[in-house]
Image (cartoon, rainbow, N blue to C red; front, side, top):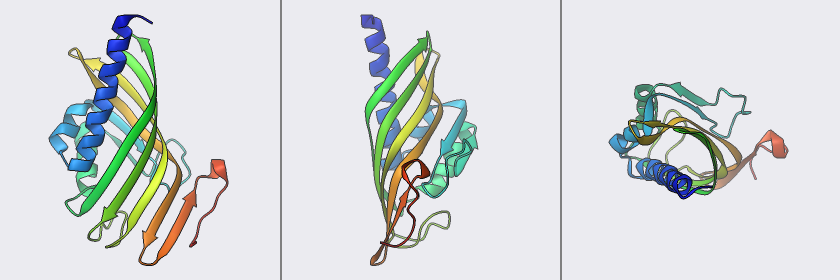
Amino acid sequence: MTPEDLVELELIKQLKYRYMRGLDTHDFELLRSCFTEDVTTDYDAGSTIHTGGGSFARTGRDDLIELLQNLISHTFIGNHVATHPEITLLEPGKARGIWRMEDRVHYLAENPLIANPGDSVHGNGHYYDEYVKVAGEWKIKHTGYVRIFEQIRRGDKDVLVVTPALGVKRGWV
């Protein structure tokens, strides 16, 4: 690995960190700047088996930003963390990454797509990303995650969802 490779890896890490900050601060222009125009997503909401289509799969930056605006409105308080990057530089201007992720989310009001007022979610899993350089700057060309577990707090009850790879457990605990 060359010193230049280490610089490229650091730039990709900074891109992912900006993406996570954009989610939590509802900064949609920052989020827009992280993606290619033809970005694809494969978000697994934790309640479906990951099959490559994801619960919230989208193609194109405009469609993705619209989805994110609907998912993370002003009544969404989130804390998203990405750690332990495994980034592979494939060729000049192309890379792939796997990140451990953890999130905690609180919904202050109903979100018709996913939540009731007062719900909270804690989960973890892994992001799978593809990156390309556009005009000398790294961008996310594909992003998606697969959850390992998701715990939903609804009122005074918890729902635990564990992905099929780890053994299916669904229901109130």
